[in-house]
Length: 516
Image 1 (cartoon, helix red, strand yellow):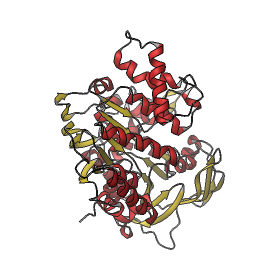
Image 2 (tube, rainbow, N blue to C red):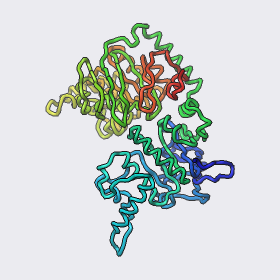
Image 3 (cartoon, helix red, strand yellow):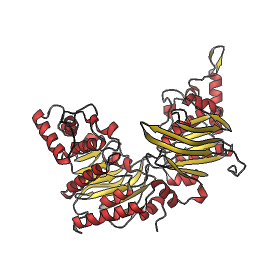
Image 4 (cartoon, rainbow, N blue to C red):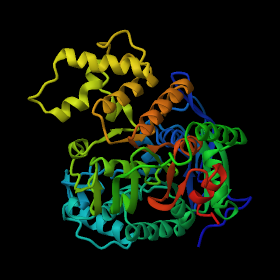
């Protein structure tokens, strides 16, 4: 039974007027959050909304520039995660932050073992560990190595560790991202039990269905600002998606104008025409992406649309061999293949521009030339080094074609603007002459002009026969550029549509699960 929250109830935790900026860029502006005892409160928002920054302020990783935090009526200013934990604020992160080589009991008490006569009291460690897990109705051997248990049990161990410090507030940051449905239900049973015991729980997720299954209250952040706080019963799925995305009438006019311009450029029978380059059947991975059926044709832009965490990037990584599928078949260029590593995908004619260009794309210390020829050199092998003259020619051609602004080819790519870095990474894959190019958020964090230049070039390459898998959080951009699009929700396909079948509102209805 959820504890009633009325006019007389006092929040267990309250943040008000929180501001935080980095190098002059506002990450949070006048943000507030209230967590009540006996409630599961879900924090929702798109990428860059400010969720991670708010959690880091709350747990002492960042000091807010201004604002107040009160816990159980008393103002606090945690200066570290340890201090936040000592105050009663415990966090369980998406990636289980435990030591797999230690036992379950050791993980629960590591760094604060109970002692007797100056030595660790192992009997007490094991008894207390069993008792904590029994509170969650988990019966396991606490002396066994943590790695011998599935991820769902490891999550329960992480929660037990959080509870062992007398937590008043439990923060769960994307705890279900790697769990299957049965494991999610096991976790939710635990959360309901903790809620009944009066704990205040902050649940951070991108999954709509899970939000409505477990939440009592929802706070929506958008672009570093609190859009609002709502009882879950008062907010429909479509309203929630609209508040997270913030699509406006101006966006709709841009979509319509872009679609009209593209329709004039292409004849009706050109769009989507061509042979199938990639075919997936029942293709997926447990805990990452439900089995999918997919056909991507030469000469078309195939869009993936959905909220952050819907499965877009997971699909891209599976199709590039960066993650290994455990179900289904994949046929590329008419041949059934198994992609064990990215090298297999590159050999099959697939290129991949990752959404994280700094960590998984550009090697910032290397030159523009070295970054551009990297994939081509990798495909050729270590013992077939491209001559320097050939490297310069390739890099020079793409710098010219894509309008990459750089002092010279040997300038470190890290000194270029974000848009020019992205163009260089696009050049890297175009140099390999791929049959299909996967673009995951290719226009994120770059200026409007660079966005347009990149997308114009991509569409031009597509019309010459290249298959494009296009992923973007900007729904108008996906609608404008895609010949066909697959809409994903909670890592499952929920509809495939041709150009013109959806507009900005109807695609939100599909994402929210409220389409007619």
